[in-house]
Image (cartoon, rainbow, N blue to C red; front, side):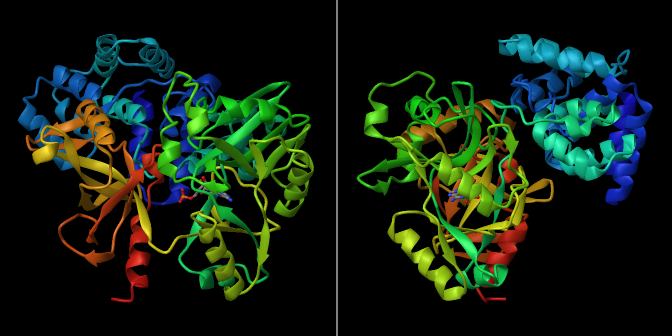
Length: 538
Ligand code: AMP
C-alpha cells in the first residue's frame, strides 16, 4: 500500500492530466495482474468494484473515532486539524504522523480487510477492524484508506483518467477501455480484459445496472434553439425517480440513478414483465393520479420503505414512463441513434399494460417552438422539458450536451449539507438549520443556509442522521459529512464574503430532499456563476 499511497501523492502533485495518467499507468504496469486490478478499483475511490454489492458502511463518525483512538489526540486538536484540512483523510495523516508505522499492508491484505469491514454488522465490530487497518501501515496509507472509505480520493483523478491509465498500461485504445468499463461496470474486470486483449468481449449483463445518460442544463428556450439548430426531440421532464428497468428471462429489476436496486415499487414488476423479450429500458417512475403527475413529495413517501405496505400503492399510484431503450433481445443499442432507439421502444411498448407508458414525444426547432413545448409541459404539471438530439448515441454515466434540460423558471440548486445547527422554539433540540454547499472541482464550497421547507418528520429523521454523521462538534454547530442532498430555491444570487464560494443565495428555502442524488452530483460553482451572470447584475 505504500507504493499505492506514493503513486496517489504523485498524481495529486501534478495538475497535468497526461502526467497523472502516465504516473498511474506506470504503477499499474509494474504490478502483478490481480494487484493492478485491486489498485485500479481503489483509484476510482471505491473499496469494491461497482458491480459488487458489498458496502463498507463506514461513516465519518466511525472513521473519526478510529483516528481518535489511534492518535490519542484531544477533541479540540482533532477539530482544529480537521478544520485546517477540510478532509478527513488529510487530517488523519497529520494526527497520526507521530505514530510508529505498522508492519505494512499489501494490496491484497487491504482488499481482504475492507471486505471484512463490510461483513461486520455492528459498529463496534467495524471499529475494531477499522482501527487495525489504519494502524497496520504508515499515516499516508491511513490517509488513503480513509479516502477510499469516504468514496473520494480528491487527487484530481476522475474515473475517466483511471480508464485512460488502464488503456496506457496495456497499450489499448482508451475508447475500447471506456466502453468495456461502461458495460461491465467493474474497473477490475475491465483491467483484466485489457490485459488479456479481450476488451471487445465485454458484454452488458442483464440485471446489472449501467450508468445513466445525464442531461446538461439550459437556462432559456433560446439556449435550446442555439444548441439544436436542426431541431430536437422534446419530452416532458418528469419530476419523479429516474429508473433503469432490466428484464432477463422472466425476472425484472429496477435500478436507481445511484445504481442501487429499487425495491419500493413492486406493483411495476408484473406489467414490466409482460413486455416481450429481454431488454433494458430507461425511464422515470412518476406518481400519478387523475391523469396528472403528483408532486415529487408524494412519491417520496414511497421511498426507503423496506416492508411492503398494502395501501401505499393505492394511495400513491406510480407509473414507469419509458423514454429510452439500451438493449433488446441480444442487441446492444447504445450506439444506435436516438431516433432508431425510439422506434424500437415504440414497437416494444405498442401494447403496454397499465402502469407502463411511453413518454410522448414532440419535435421542436427554433426558439418559439421550444418555448411553446416548455409551457405546454408546465401546463401538464411537469417540471420542464428535455431536448434530445435525434442522432445521439446513449452515453452511460456522462452528462453531455446531447440532452439538455430546461426546468421551470424558478431556478433551483441541488446542494449538499455541510454543517447543521440546532433550531429554536418548536425546533429546539432538532438539527434544523442547514448550511449547504455546491461543488467546485473535488471540493464543496458553502453558499447558503436555510431553515425552512422540510416537514417536522423529515427534520426529526435528519437529526438522527446528522448526529451519526458528525465530523466535528463545535457545540452550537456541527460539521457533518456531506451526505444529504437538498434542492433549494432562492430569489437571487449575490456576491458575498460570508461563504467560501464567494456567493450567497437570497431568501433560500428548501424545496425538497433529493435522496436520489449523490453528493458528487450536486450543482457546481460554475453553474452558480452562470446563474449569477444571467441575472444581468455584473
Ligand atoms: P436533474 O435531476 O434536475 O439534474 O434532472 C435530470 C433528471 O431528470 C434525470 O436524472 C431524470 O431523472 C429526470 N428526467 C425526467 N424526465 C426525463 C426525460 N424525459 N429524459 C431524461 N431524463 C428525465
